[in-house]
Length: 86
Image 1 (cartoon, rainbow, N blue to C red):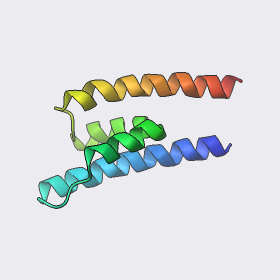
Image 2 (cartoon, rainbow, N blue to C red; image 1 turned 135 degrees about the vertical axis):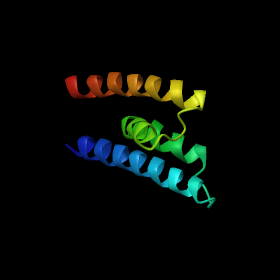
Image 3 (cartoon, helix red, strand yellow; image 1 turned 135 degrees about the horizontal axis):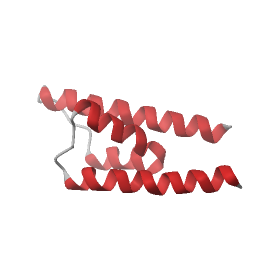
Image 4 (cartoon, one colour; image 1 turned 45 degrees about the vertical axis):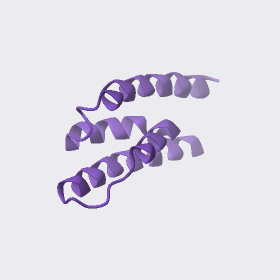
């Protein structure tokens, strides 16, 4: 059950960070480093980050995000399936 809370929080955080970084980019403010965006995604927030990318139209022209995020989601789905099936 704790894993579900963790996954939910990580995805919510990924979504919020994408929106916040987009807002900061528009206002020429300090930006959230890509390393942080990727870190949250790798640690379980890839789905939320991907939804945030498309909702806020942020990082969609970066191949590393456009291609890497769906691949990371695939890895997470396989891992989630493994943990929930065992």
